[in-house]
Image (cartoon, rainbow, N blue to C red; front, side, top):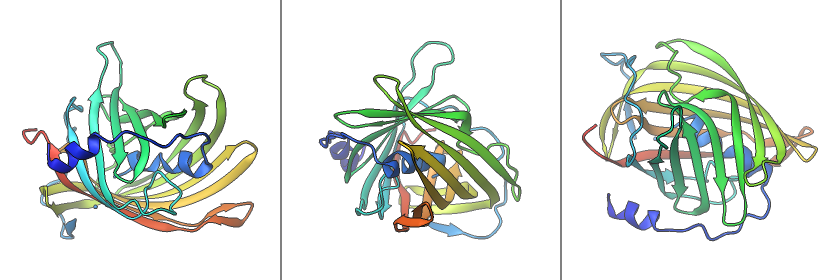
Length: 266
């Protein structure tokens, strides 16, 4: 584990989350729906159509992030470290992997739960005061494993929001995700060179909570490496958020790029 990861993982969330804005709850789904570096645009020599091994406890991905936190409202610069690590999987049959994500300049903790095939079932946004659980129906395929190079597909999801402790339902969202898989590219970062699946996603999200509805549009470029079992690069492009046709949140861009990962023997 590098020095930055050791220091960052010792940070505890200190800000009590006493209410959850629609921006926080909706935008937090994006980092795990997708996942920055120098890329080679020539067509790759091989196509990555094999399944990577399932996650393993202890895997740690350290990214250098630039721009606002994709789990926030876009108004605060969150440039700094972004840490993703595989924390646990209970021994029970059909249990899910718990993957934790933290940002250096954001006090929240983001937990994602997926199966051995990287199907995302649930996410939890945790603060020191409250937490919100989000359930995906159907599960989200993080890797878009069914897409061949050059293919595209539209996915549809429903996301239900619950207060984690009481299980009280507090909202829902409808998500349309139009994904195109481009040809594989080689991404070069401080952590090494990786042949990656390349995806371009156009998202349309309508979320409803407390009688209010918001409309979010975003595009995400993501680069997945079977070698490390996670994303190497992410680029986010958020359009202005609207309510009843009125802009309530300006658009922004953000980017993350892998700087280190452990273990290095996968």
